[in-house]
Image 1 (cartoon, rainbow, N blue to C red):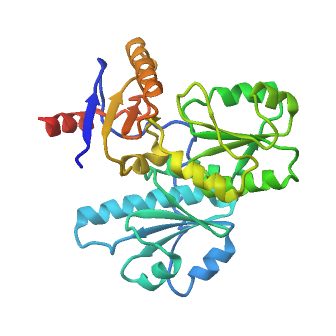
Image 2 (spheres, helix red, strand yellow):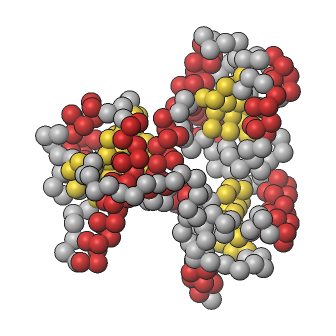
Length: 327
């Protein structure tokens, strides 16, 4: 079945697609080589040496000077990220899909051009834009605890403002609760793409209308959460529910998971909308998108992706290509 794609462009000036440089301030690259060439002799040592290892799986270095330059730029991104993360005990390496095919097979590396992060017994594929800023923020999120605890009204207000994120929150007796442990283990399966919160405070649970061992699932931009049925939940039950419901009706394109968003393999109607939230017209347009999503969230074939040009200031090139495709 063919999918129908719609591109909505409200009135504002558009610029080309590349992430805005926000957040972390990076030092200049100091010239020290920190990214290893991973092979059959050193990969076990690298995995044991660091608490977390980030590996770039790439095709053989091409003969073309232009493609070689692109490879060098990617290596520079990794070197800069490695420099920033050096004190966090994060190792970096590159795996050649031809020279190091045996290592790649042992490690489960499959897609050339991808970055894989090894943390404990997990392998997490980075689906974001390959920039030092985005990669470092992704890795820092992975180093955090998988569940954030909410203990007071101020923290609850911050939670309520996170309307752009898929998030879950559960109410448990204590950190020693077996049900909280199952919740935490499920959180590790989705970190850092989906945010997990927990509270052990009765007053916070009352504000959220949560009962003991109950978990609420918040879809982005929806006014009310969905309570996961069948409490208390095992890790497997939580993972199954999240996997089934993790694609929201309306989502914001983000640098840290933009490729996962674009590769979403669903059929139906796909709407890509550009709205600058700081602009009055863009803000009003976004509110309309939210209402459309809320009214139609029961339709599994509907997918709306919102792009804010403030986050991707190089949008003009993409939108011109989209118009050419439509023509």
